[in-house]
Length: 194
Length: 188
Image (cartoon, rainbow over all chains, first blue to last red; front, side, top):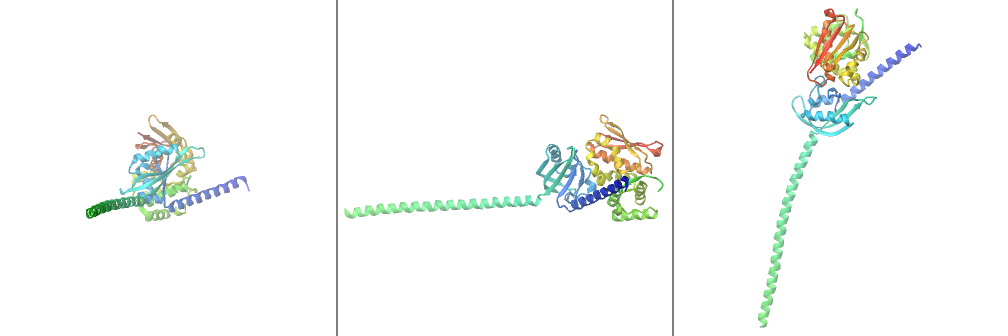
């Protein structure tokens, strides 16, 4: 087989592999329940997955090409991420608020990973958003319960203290009375002897 | 088709996504049906991203969509402007979009990844005056495509320029008698 034909066949195979890989990434990304997007070095969203579309209630066509700051309630926080990730390789668990297209506010935990090419040039970053609305709600509920229980315990302690004070007072009075009785008994027996 | 030259299938995919976004599944069927009627059948679902297909077919798809949906030139501009958002090839080329200057310098490579004819030349990059000029050689299909490409090139500018105010203008056009097309992108 001529060298040219071999190269042609090899090229076709590579193209096929690349398309298969693209299809695999698309499928995987569509399945992934975690909201993920790719952002370029100047903070422009270049790709998002289905979960991200669902989270921000916006189609890929509407949000790709926009600044990442458009996704968050506080645009400055997105700017901070852009500056921070250029120096670091990873940011984990930053809490931010997503502002959806229909103006809903959703608390999320943001993880960011820097992207570099083979030569080590910084080419942007991946952003993953985990919804922590439920977690936040649970945390608040738990905090409320702890506060409630602490209040109840305080009341119980106060009651116990009152009870303690009462019983101690009573004990002291009994001892006092007993002493008085003894004193009176002693006095009475002395009077009888006299 | 008489006009020679091929384009990657990824470009057809971007046409399909935009038509679907604007007109739904019915829109896709309408364009496919019309293309079939004209004797140039296209099945968007069967197109391979990295395969080569006649550019004349891609150009005809855009013209047909404009005609059957009564799209304006602004719609065509938006179609071009949206295309890089979901192009498989653009995603692969994102590594070149590191800075406006680098992107500008990579134009010829960018073109070659999409077309097997013509060329895109970086003519002028003026950072002080804030403009770039790109020259498109050997591409003459239909004036509608000039509008589409203006939208497309603007998006590439929007990907790498941090300015919010970016504009594009076709300053030379083969349909106006010039030997090539030239686009000027300006930003504030």
